[in-house]
Image (cartoon, rainbow, N blue to C red; front, top):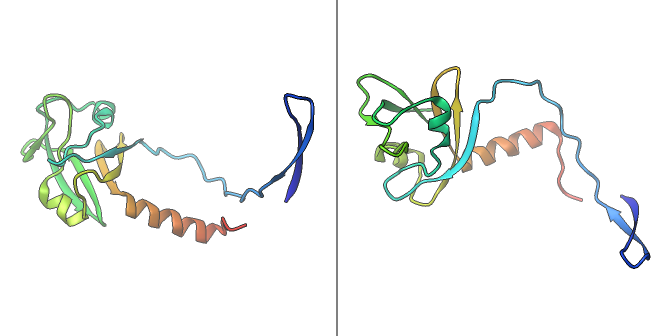
Length: 144
């Protein structure tokens, strides 16, 4: 641990122990899309409409929903069974919510992939497990 010295408003000098910071590897820049953490309401609606706006989807646009590797994917489809709601919300189908283990009030990471024109819904437990795996592989030790 390192010691940092600072001066208070009264002119007194105080020492403060600084916790060590883990080294995080620098990853290459990639198209990571548009990210948002949002809540599901009782009918499966994603509260945050901004990913839909960023993708350029409009009210009434037909969508299809599928599950790939424990995440939900929503994309435009001419014959899709879903549609963007009048106010720009996307509602996840009940079957998708049940399969992904999502309930009213759960928070999800929503990623709008602009190049693929798709909205990916990650349950936060998946995000947490991915972060834990990354921290372990990168040697990140958050214990003092």
